Length: 269
Ligand code: SF4
Ligand code: SF4
Image (cartoon, rainbow, N blue to C red; front, side):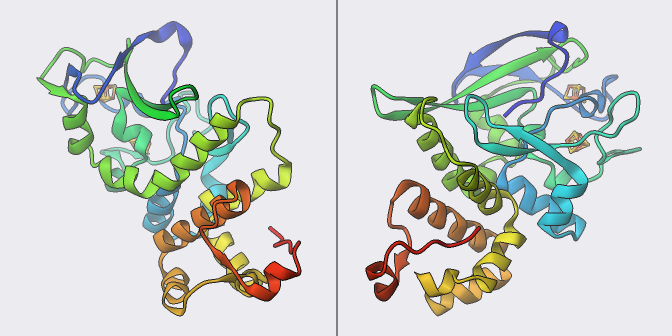
């Protein structure tokens, strides 16, 4: 995930790990304050969407419709919502107000990471996943080499990133699994739609679970059913289990016996 400005403005990023250090400061007194909130390319994770739509009192359908356009996760065909900037000259973030970020406590992960960007790499030979980070230096950002030196890990803690990572864990696994299949494996459009609904449109997925044959096909214990009816994070957990079961064949959800015997049964997305 990253914020991207015009290429000419970007100094080549430096690759970092959790223990790497960098020196940076950002506060309301700095001359460039909120400059980074204009013309930004902000990919939204499942946790971002849940936090933002809850804060704004919107359904996920409404939030996606009003505030996002469609993008793709780097080097995959997997869709991801991208925050829609305003159509003013500076392409201002819709959440920027006179005093700064109007949703600061629920700002997206990309904004929390900045001036770092974060990514994950799947090493097919080693069958392992590696987290990596990059320090992005843009000429408009005056916070570099000022203030205190801190590690990437300290920055992640300071910016409240770790709870986001915990919520996004299953989604990240799905992305890495997709990457591990390689670019020559094609994913049908319907599967990509299922991925989009499960990961980003949690209220639509809730309707799908309760209004379709979903609960006739999959065994969901009463306690979990109650939780998903009112809790978006629990619903996201179910969505990830469903996607891992249907897309990756991982048996995260149990299928009712009579349904399994009369296979194939298709759950309409
Ligand atoms: S220092 Fe960088 S991150 Fe902070 S307000 Fe300025 S441009 Fe944004
Ligand atoms: S969400 Fe907040 S921090 Fe992020 S770009 Fe918009 S105003 Fe800036």
